[in-house]
Every structure is written in structure tokens, then in C-alpha cells.
Amino acid sequence: MATAAPPVLSYLAETLLRRPPSLRELVVRLGYAEDYAWFAGLARRLFPDEAETLLGIPDLGQRLARFARLFEERHFPLYAPYMEFFVDEGEEPPFTWLRRGIPFQLMGFGYDDLHEMWDGYREGLSALALLAEPPDFYSDEPGGLRTAWLEAAAQRIPRETLLRIPAGGIPLDALTEAVQETEYQGAAQAAAWVRAETGSFFLDHSFEDGDYDGFSDPWEDEIIQEGTEEWRKADQLMDAVVKLADWLEGDLSSRFAEMLDFILPRLPEPTTEQEENDDDDQ
Image 1: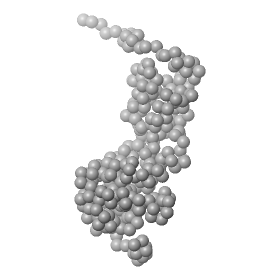
Image 2: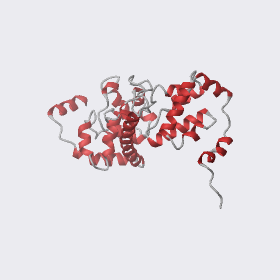
Image 3: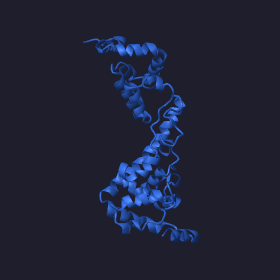
Image 4: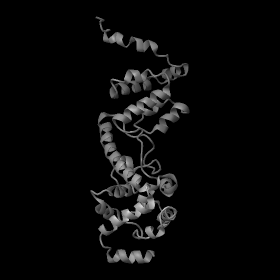
């Protein structure tokens, strides 16, 4: 009966088959030895079972990509373009930049995102954004953003259907109450996402809002755990929105009207002030 190899020797074959680092990487490692030691320590702390295999990947880009995939599988996505840039073009290696803080992936909508909604995003999500009042702080003029959305929507949804939406959109709190715990709950969640009112760090911030430069908190266990819990909630919200968007896109014009048939009767009666505002908008 064959005897199992000692644990230390069991990794010998794998180690011997690894290619040595390139000359370019050796120079980088020597110049940034402390930063690379930090990165290796981080990998071993986060992924004790996979770290040595990860660190043994010869190509630096593939090594960082593997690190990012493992981290996303266990926690939340990292902002890949930063790592890709510093692998290919950065004057400093990517592990030096990683040491400066966690590069969170932000999923919020910035100015350009909102103004290019129907051109840059799927039709189901763009249609859901029509229901609620738009974020006025991104409008060029009163009603400007919503007018642009409705004009784009009219190419896909009959105008008579769009005219059924209350002028100016439905207040988010009223929409949320109308669809709560129903198959249309994703409509309110989509509106909150577009308006940056979900309460989620990942969904309420974008790289355009000026509050975030790509790096944030240090790689501390408590911060990573908090981010992991936040991402799970954000992921659930996005799943609900995507599910409803998928359904809408199956027959956008008729299903959007069907959704309005469900939502509009459940909205509170407009107040006198709301009625006067609607009359002024017409």
C-alpha cells in the first residue's frame, strides 16, 4: 500500500512547476518589496486555502484578477478598472494602490448615467425609472430630465400609456407603499436606486458624485464584513429590479400598461396642492 507524501512535500511538485517571476516583476518586487509583502499577507489572511496558488500565478494581471474573483465570491466586487489600469499602465504596481484602501465597486447613477438612461441602460430599468419623481438635483431645468425620459420612452411605449403616469412622477414613498410585498416591488426599488435613496453605500454612490475617489477604508476584517453585509442587501435589491425588468422587456408596451393598472388604483388620492401642481404642469 502506497504511503502518502508528507504534507510539506505534497506541494513540491506544484512548486517546481511554477515559472519564475518575469524580470520586470522582479524589479517591481524589489522596488516595492514592502507593498508586495503586504499584498501577500493580505491574500494569506483572506484566502488561507488558495493564497499560495494565487501568489504563484506567473502573470501579474491574472494574479490580481484571481484575487478580485475570490474576494467577490466571498465578499463584494472590487472596482476592476483600477487594477487593470495599474497592471497595464500605472507607474506603481497595483498592489501598492490596493494598500491605500479597498477599491469598492459603486453601482449608483451619476449625472451622465441619468441623462443617457434610455441609451446606456436596458429598457426595462429605464421604464421603471419613469414611475417616480426624478432626482431634481440632476435636472438641467424643472422637468428637463423627466421630459427627456418620456420622449425616449414614447418610441417604445404608446403615449396614451405614458400619459397615465401622474405628472411629475409618483412620490417615492407612495410608490413604495403601493407595491410593497407584491410582484411589482422592484418598481419602487428601481426608483430608489435611480434616486440614490436605497440606503445602500454601493447603490447610492457613483464615481461622478465627487465624494469618492476610488479608494476608501483599509482592509480591516470589520470593514470587510460590514461591506459584505451591505453588498448582500444591495444584490438582493438589484435582483428584484432585474427580475421585473426582464418581465417588462418580454412585451414592454403591454406589460408597462399592465403594471400601471395594478399600481395606479393603489396610490393615495392627490391632495389639493398636488392637483394644483398637476394642473400647472399641463
